[in-house]
Amino acid sequence: MGGGLQQQRVGHAQRAAVLELLNRALEEGYLELHEYENRMPQVTQAKTVHALYAQVADLPPQFRWDPRHLPPAGAEGRRRERASNEALTSVILGAIAIPSALCVGAGGILGIVGAVFGVRALRDGANPPQAIAGIGLGLVGIALSLLVLVITLFG
Image (cartoon, rainbow, N blue to C red; front, side, top):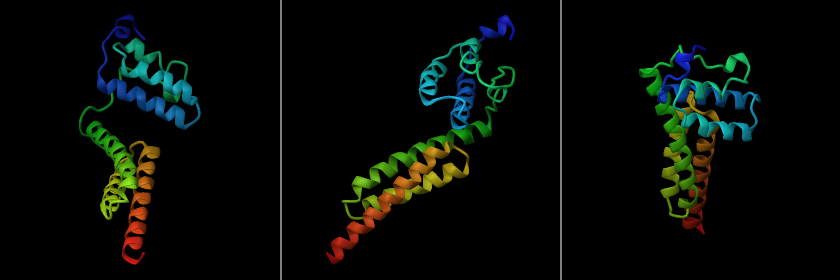
């Protein structure tokens, strides 16, 4: 990597590309969780190509980042960001749906919306564990809401 390139500033797209490589390395067992957790803040705070490259330099070649090949900033980048936001939204709504199940109907509605966001995020390829967690929490919220409804009506 050339000296001038090492000091070049990086933006959100480059940081997101390196975070994606770290996510893959963690999922495939090349990084342990504590290593991943130590590298994430370094990536999100990186200002130069050198700082980003240092976070993946010790990983196998399939996880190397080449700053000369920038990720797409157009529609694909926006789709990935939207899918990632949907995965996070599904977890949040699913988690809120569980205690909201005590309010007849509210937990079920939140659970349905959370599960829908999770399915959309999973379909679009965003963080699968997060999307699956959101779907699961949403389904638990729906089930608890139905249980409370049944107990209210027939209890």
